[in-house]
Length: 170
Image (cartoon, rainbow, N blue to C red; front, side, top):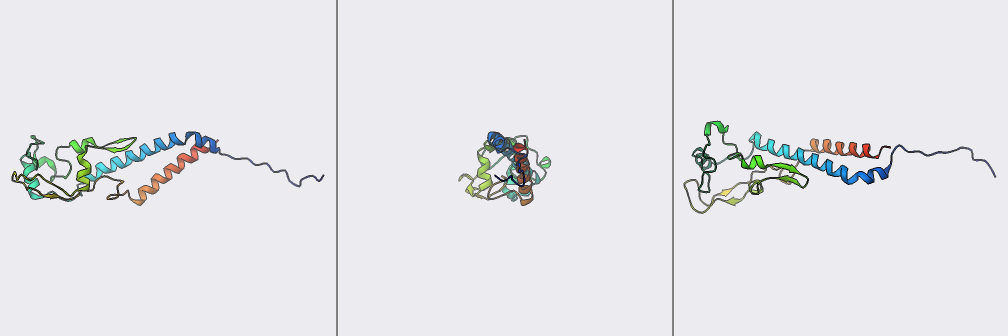
């Protein structure tokens, strides 16, 4: 029998089974980091105040500590301190409720209603508009109405690949 011309030895510097064992844990941690990033960006959208303006009637109601629902949501509200009546920040309840969880971004239920818009104020007119159609104020980052920008998505993808690379190394 003839002797082989070359001895070939194949080695690798990675283990797919290591990635397989840790995949769920890696993805869970990575997803939470992405959700935290989207949550921070969602709050920044509100802070920047680039949402559709409030109507003059809403501004007037707020200057009196009222809203369109016939009750005072913020009795200590002072117009001059509000930096121009930023939408979605009147009582700060919605803003303060925005948080990252393993399941996604959580917030007060009415946050999604404001994001989607096209809902109506009550039919009783308390002086600030009855049955007024409220326009959408898309502020939840990562949704169809407000997707994350391409540069940020590339950064997130890169971080995910780095985690996989680290996980498969011996």
